[in-house]
Image 1 (cartoon, rainbow, N blue to C red):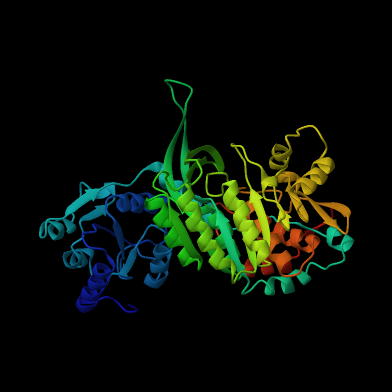
Image 2 (image 1 turned 60 degrees about the vertical axis):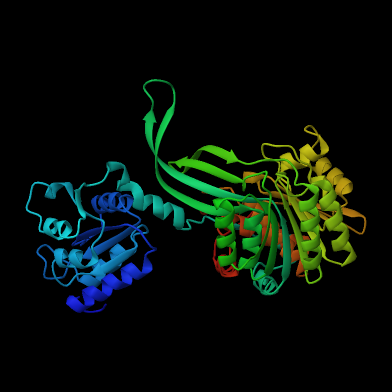
Length: 501
C-alpha cells in the first residue's frame, strides 16, 4: 500500500488482516500521528496489545493536523515495534477504517475520554468497545528493554600471544570455519526451554523483606543440548538431535523452534516428566531468581532402547557425536556406554560436556572422548578433589576419563587447555575474551560445540579452543541462548579488537 488508502484499499487492508488472523482471534486497534514514537506511545500500544490477541495500528495521513513527518517514515517507525502485528496507512479518518475492520476493541489515550469521539459511533455499529487508557508508567522503559535483549553490545578482546605460541594466525580461523559447512553432527542430551522474564524493580515490600517486581516482557529460547544442536547448524552442520521431552507445550515450542533453525529433531516422549523448563526473572540486567521445572530420574529401559536404535541409525552417516548432559535423565550410564561403543565401532569422533550446576554429576563417565569441556567445579566434583591445584586436577581427569583433550572453563578467568599427545601432557591458558558479559548462559554450550567441530575439521586443540572461546565471547554478549552463525564469527575475526595476554 504505497499510496493513500481509499475505500477499496481500506477493504483490501481489512481482508489481509483478517486472513492472517486465526479463527476467533480478537483485534485491538489504535490510530495516531506517531511523528516520533516516544514512551507515551509505547505505554498506550502495550496496553492495547494486552486487550486482544492481535494489535493493528493506523498511521494518520500527512494532511492530519499536527503531522510533521511523512507517512512512510512514521509507518516504518511504528512497524519496528515488536508487539504491533499490523500497521496500515490511513487515507481518511480512523472511523471509516474501524467500520470496515470491526476490531474487538479500539483504544484511545485517556485525555480523549471527555472529548467528542467519532470512533464511538463506528464501534457501536457492530458492537465493539472503545476504551480510554494511556497505559502504565513502567512501560516507558520497554524500548530500552527490547534494545538490551536484541542488540549485541559485544566487548570481545582477542588475545594475540596465544596464537603466536601455537603457530597460527587468527585470520586462518576463517578458513577453518569454511570446513565446518556440511559436517554431519549428531547431538544427544538434555533439552531445556529457557524463559527470560524481564521485570521492573518496584522496590521492597512494606509488609516483609521481599523484593517486588512487575513482569514487563518474556522471551523464550531453546537451551541445553537443544542449543548445542542449534549452534552447530548455525555453523553450517547437518544436525540430528536426540532428546527426551514431556507431552506439553514446552516440547512443541522446542520442536517448532529447532526445526525452524534447520535441526532434525528426534524427541522421545516420557509421560513421567515435563519438558525441562527454567525461568529466569531479571531486573536491571541482572538475574534475580531462577525457577526450575524438571525431573531428574533416568528414562525407562524401553525409551533407552528406542533412543539407542535411533542414534545407531544416525551414526551410519555421522562425522561427529556430541553428548550434552545436564544430568536430567536423558543419558543414564548404560545408554552412554552403548552409544559410545557404537560410535567407536563406526569411527565417529566423540566429545562430551556434562554440567552439574546445582546437582551431582561426573564428566569422567564419558570415557574415550576426543574432547571434554567441564567447568572447574565439574572437574573437581568428578574427582571429589577440592584441594589440589588445577594442573593436578587436569592431569588426573585426563587420565581417569581417557580423553585426548580437556578444556576446563574458568568463567571470568578464561579457560585452561590441556592435551595429551604422544605421552606428553601440555597445558596453556586463554583469558576470557569478553570481560563484560550480559548473560553467561550458553557460553559453555557454544565453546563446546565450536571447539568440537573444529577438532573434527582437522584443527589442533589450540586453534579449536581459540575458536570455541571466541564463540563463547559472542554468545555472552547478548541475552538468551540464540544460535551463533559462521558470519558472526567471521565478522568478529575481522574486527580490530585485539589485546595482549
